[in-house]
Image (cartoon, rainbow, N blue to C red; front, side, top):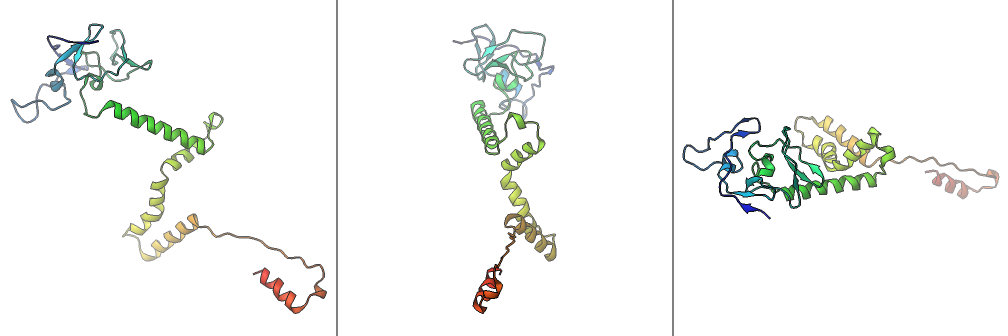
Length: 213
């Protein structure tokens, strides 16, 4: 659906600043991957609407481009949502969609974000948090505590034990508090009612006393 352009566009501005054309490693060396200078050196393709972009662009399949305007936002519209990135004036795209910036695969980033959303949704379901309780700060605290449970456990148990600045007494106190939090002592109240104590034998009394602990 796209064809290679014969000439790459002349890059005059980077967002609202001047393009930095210097390269790392001294004069005559190749520009660092992902920089504006690197984008300038890439071959270009012409999209169906006539927009010329670097061949290494990261415009998602099926995405559309908003009409050029006076705003500074990236023109890419994917899943009916427009990118919030700041556009490069030469391309109308943000650095990421133009193919610059970091070398991380955007598809991989989207998968990680989706996995994070699924984890958060599962946490809310497990904790019984729904729309009716969305305004409860304690509910959000429970979600965060669930997500960072391993870190909390390390802070409570490993932290005091590994802190060499703590003295023996302080470390023992921290350990006892951790034990109390993880294995609290159970307390129970037991009562025994004897309807006819006069009829009890000595063996019956000893048995009753043993039941009371």
